[in-house]
Image (cartoon, rainbow, N blue to C red):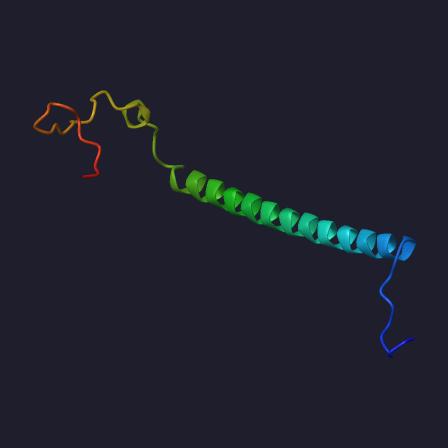
Length: 87
C-alpha cells in the first residue's frame, strides 16, 4: 500500500543521492577554503605593502632586531621553587 508517501531511494538510487550530496559538500568546502586562503593572502600582501611603505625612509637597526639578552626575573615562593600559578 502506498499511503501517499514517496518511497525512499534504495540501492543504486541511494548511492547516487549520497554521492551527489558528498560532491556538493566537498565542493562547498573547497570553495570556502579557497576564499579564506585568498583573503588571508590578500591581507598579508596589503600588510607587507604597508610595512614596506612605512619603513621606506628608516634604516634598520640591528639592535632592534636582536634577541633579548636578559632572562626574565622569576618569582619564588617560600619553598624556593619558582611559582607557576595555581593554589
